[in-house]
Length: 248
Image 1 (cartoon, rainbow, N blue to C red):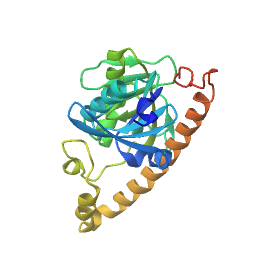
Image 2: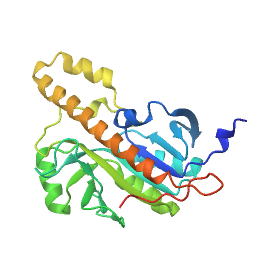
Image 3: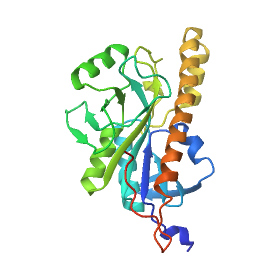
Image 4: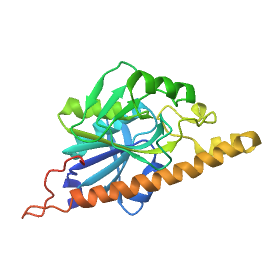
């Protein structure tokens, strides 16, 4: 058996979609593994593993649990795209929240680092919904996965942090996408492209979304690479990375 089978990542990173983290993981090893009857694609390097669980809380929870059981990390990050809830946040800005709130039940996870509030919603938020989330929770940004990852980490007694890149402004209205997300949280890009191709009134919004998502992905991956470089540079005499901690 290859020695990599015994490697245990110290940092696990949970994203929704591979396009969010592709600049970071494009040269990493890929490992296909099964957990609880589901197949997961893990991207591995040194003492870090990345897995994309799909859009939404359920996929994020499953991916987090798989990473925890299979790789025994010290800390788990929820990373990816988020929507701005105020006009101060711009495309590509990074959000490292001090608190993550689940909009469904009001539960929250406090982090001993970071700033502000990230709220997790069950659906893509419209401008009106973003306004309500900002007023209800005092949040600066909204995503769809962080609260589920936080809960999985808490259940296992593992450190948790979140890092999100703003991919849509507070007043951006998404084109209809729900029907293109399958039961596993995967976004059917080809089907959506065909849908949008014959609806020219959607083209400006789709083009803006593509540009902004690409910008957010680059910003997120630069920040993650800097984080990993700083966290994984300290090693003990045996050559194993010391316990990783979330960024200040």
